[in-house]
Image (cartoon, rainbow, N blue to C red):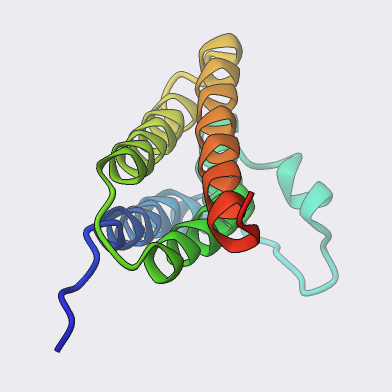
Length: 143
């Protein structure tokens, strides 16, 4: 049996973090919905947003964000795991740095939501993902 590539560790940690955020989101969203009282199945997200406190919306929004750019990370990390054929320390450091930046982004977004800090963390994670993508492209396309 082949050894399991180390780059799969960050993939699993980020997925586990997404489940933590989901639990956090429900722990504040369900009580907030109960306080709203007259929810109907015809209410839009915009209509419910008018009644939800900002800190509740932040957790829901961040949970959704964890299904946006991180899906690219999963694809690129899996591509690196398959195409590399061997361990690569640079890929592993980039992957862990990406996961760290996304976790930090979540913590900022879900707590104080300081926009410039949050944007800086997003930009950092985007840059790391771009480097990982370029490294994967080099492997796949041979340039």
